[in-house]
View 1: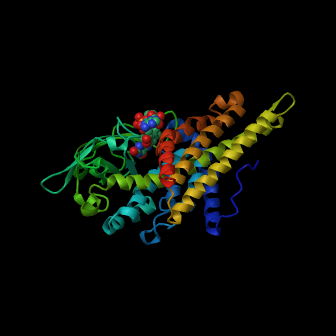
View 2: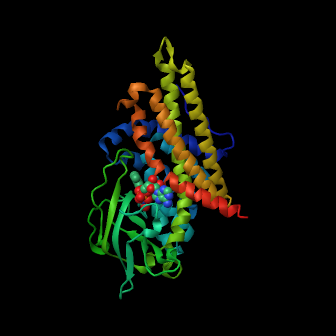
View 3: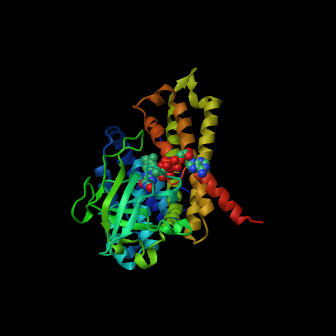
Length: 404
Ligand SMILES: Cc1cc2nc3c(=O)[nH]c(=O)nc-3n(C[C@H](O)[C@H](O)[C@H](O)COP(=O)(O)OP(=O)(O)OC[C@H]3O[C@@H](n4cnc5c(N)ncnc54)[C@H](O)[C@@H]3O)c2cc1C
């Protein structure tokens, strides 16, 4: 039974073609295999290999660096489709995308030449690291430090937490404190491009001092690894400061906050994808399952649930697309990105829970896909800023825009 969303009519031909291609990929390669990788909690290497072939690691990277050069709006459409398949798959692309955004926007030409072509093919993947064991929302509380040594290299020390793609990435865009006395405080942070060996727990040689403990065990969002990173005397050349030492030292906080804005559109698209899938599952199950002599879809209480879910999915998609289009047009989109992230991640949770209820007891069984979605959806309420933090961002931006 075909219950997938119709593609919006305002898509360009290119957007339609690529979205259809990714939807087919999700239907044929992700959905039939997600349960296996989720259950085993293993990295879905064959799926990722196909994503490399499709060029999905270089969607937004300019063509001159080997990517597709597509805009954020098209990227968000792709992420929705991947996430409809399994949010762990979109997670593998997510921090990689943020890393490439940081390089494209703030990197020196040398840095772009060095990393972007290999990132576009997926030969190397990127992680993004702000959080620490004692902080997530309060980024300015970061304790990890980098100090310049006599040889001109910076020594990084400290512990990072919850790094998506922490083990298998070859590059970590890591925010650390370089000037504890800076006034204002945010000028004391710098973003380093920390190179490491992908897949190695204890780095040696030029990457010695960067260790990756075993992956964190999670309730959902399996397959993609989340790890701590321990920097213990890791030495990073000054040329690996994002934007170069001259331009980039002390600019890391602003750079990361800029990247978080597109990251929020990205997470919003993931919320739309999981909400859409939950709706599809509910539409199908409610027409198959009978109670009191008729399909449950004929009970008004169930139809109301379907109506609320479909409305949330469409509203979330529209907010997400609006935020992406504003960003692509070079217009201010901080408020809109916060709204999209808040609404779409909450819509994801809502639709998954409603779909779960519609599945009755079977929703609680691992035989049914909704069980996985139920464990996956809450992540989106947390990553790239919790719902509480989004409300703070939205409130602050509203007051800035409407100051009397
Ligand atoms: C699976 C997973 C993957 C992740 N991947 C990454 C990654 O790749 N890179 C990375 O850097 N981080 C990552 N994170 C971390 C994530 O960004 C943080 O968990 C998130 O920002 C929240 O921080 P926290 O967990 O420290 O919660 P806290 O900041 O301790 O917040 C705890 C609670 O207090 C609320 N709260 C905090 N401050 C306020 C306030 N001022 N007003 C009202 N309420 C408040 C929060 O909303 C939350 O409900 C990941 C997390 C998870 C779970």
